[in-house]
Amino acid sequence: IKLINLEKKDIIKKIKVKNTHIISEELKNQKSIIILSSHYCNWEWLLARVSICWEEDLYAIYKPLSNKFFNKLILRTRKKFGAKMLQMQHTGKFIIKNSKKRNIFFFLSDQVPENITNAYKCFFMGKKTSFSTGVERLSKKNNIPVFYAEMKKTNNGIYNVEFSKINHNNITKQYVKKLEKTILENP
Image (cartoon, rainbow, N blue to C red; front, side, top):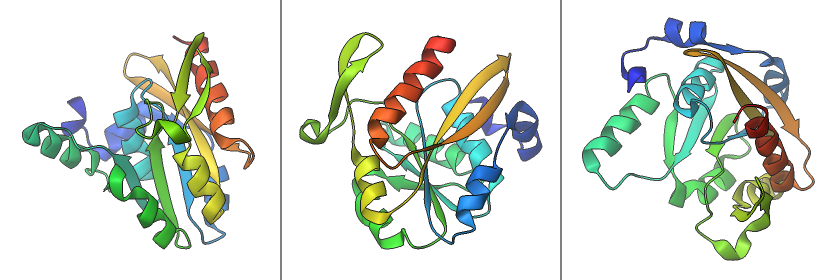
């Protein structure tokens, strides 16, 4: 809710990004990238900060809320700094069609997958769970590099973000390990 009243300068002041150069280098190749993160820390502000970092089209994948008023409010807030919102049901076709352009696709990929048959099953935080393999399949099919965005709270309302490239082999497995490490370092 606070994001509604924040300005660009506020977001830049509150969220420091350590290594945008690794993504900028990849974007020089004139192709799309995927940024993968989770519903951890302040993911709404993370989207705002990533939207400010690059001038490429940034598409954030989302699932509409059932409450139309709050869905409209959330969409307006998420688009405030330039992100475009892409409904989950249209994601695959859209990315395949637009993967050769310089786009950034932003996924929060830590919720139980809708299609359990294509899920990656593993132990996560000591419990058996499933993760969607959609990002991995899209990345491999379209040769799109994937980066993990790790956000850490450093003080009240202050955060750091660091990106790391995920190897093209076992993208989902690597993502799950990185996410678990992030959570365990600061539950």
